[in-house]
Length: 144
Ligand SMILES: Cc1cc2nc3c(=O)[nH]c(=O)nc-3n(C[C@H](O)[C@H](O)[C@H](O)COP(=O)(O)OP(=O)(O)OC[C@H]3O[C@@H](n4cnc5c(N)ncnc54)[C@H](O)[C@@H]3O)c2cc1C
Image (cartoon, rainbow, N blue to C red; front, side):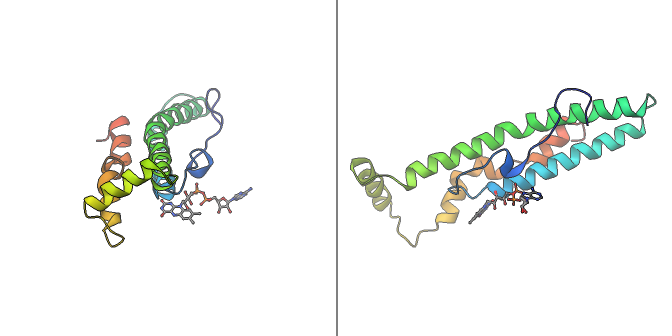
């Protein structure tokens, strides 16, 4: 347990539960675990090169890594959860003028039930899907 600062860790659905309109909950949970694993691996490597008291050094390094973890994961997971919220609005419009306009635009642009929605959503989420959390983590710990 770190001697100060962050005293516990949440990841996956425990800290960023999301609506099922962007299909990214498991992806975010896996990314959280991968980033945390890389940070803890870095702690182990650094501890091997430390000469100070092991307990103090270990606690400090873990605490520092957990702050880095939060910093790396908060913005992308927040953007993802907000994207799912926006999708809910677009997918579940009440009948009315806005829904009519949505359907008109989709129909006018040639979209049907047979449209490649996965391809379309992937393009819309390209920023999220092309993000590379491991690379971001490597940059942060000076391994990129
Ligand atoms: C129907 C459905 C479809 C989905 N589709 C997608 C999709 O297409 N793409 C996508 O990315 N995500 C999808 N998700 C979301 C995804 O499943 C979750 O975001 C993901 O599983 C979260 O992983 P997690 O490890 O945080 O939590 P979980 O997978 O919920 O794991 C938590 C684990 O902790 C265990 N546990 C709970 N309490 C305790 C306890 N007290 N002691 C010990 N163990 C405990 C549970 O049994 C469970 O095994 C979908 C979810 C649902 C329900």
